[in-house]
Length: 161
Image: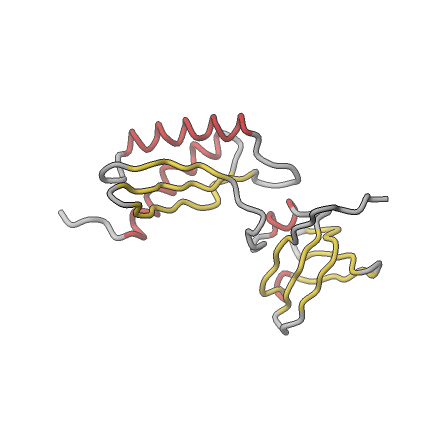
């Protein structure tokens, strides 16, 4: 029997992990398998499905135990591996409407398909697009007009009025 292609393995892992992550009230953003010497690293990135806030350490611990159990049961990863369950970093690009909804209130730089970069406070995000406050001016952008967006790191955030 020949080894599974990497994309087949990732698809099977995603299919095995999505139900258990979903049952924990979380969303499986990504799953990867990478070589690390003689071992592999299985990395699962989980997040809240929608809305503001973040994944608590208790939630992360619980879903890690559940994922570990599933990986033991399905035996998809050959050989020794280390499991890492994490949340998306602050540098994650905003690519889905739910990513934007989670970032409401944050400073965002959005690049349009025309190549224009717009930086402003994300005020609204719905199924059609986003609304930024750009220096007191309201700027509406549809998702179809966005090519890339990211949350800007703010070391000291101005108080909201």
